[in-house]
Image (cartoon, rainbow, N blue to C red):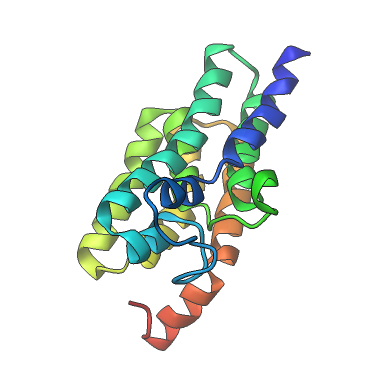
Length: 190
């Protein structure tokens, strides 16, 4: 029964907005009201530079990683682990503490992959780095990595609950990046 409490705990952890907290602590403008309006690391870089973005990125990844690691330490079953993964991710997108208006979820989804297994995190980050090195477009790298993540989960972990969870996460990431996809197709994505 206690293991089911990990799901709302993961959502609450995911709901902590690293971008808003970092910007406030560093005396920067609110990322929801400046730049792209997205409370994520890329927008924080526009507003406050690389250091603020790196801290935001780390915070967003950690809030995905920590609940999943806790679930694994407690040796929860596959279903609970999948729900923890999804709850941490959804918490970032729809944070209860910030009016349900969160980021796009790339860093938090990376954090949950690392929590599931380091090999999965390495496969996803390696894909992102390779695509970014070739194309120099962060959103394209994120979209390719997100699209391939369910396949990596199947090959590395082999757990159907987690595969389904990462299919959902990938679809949501694609949906949250629809404006980026439109700009990519039009050749206007920076």
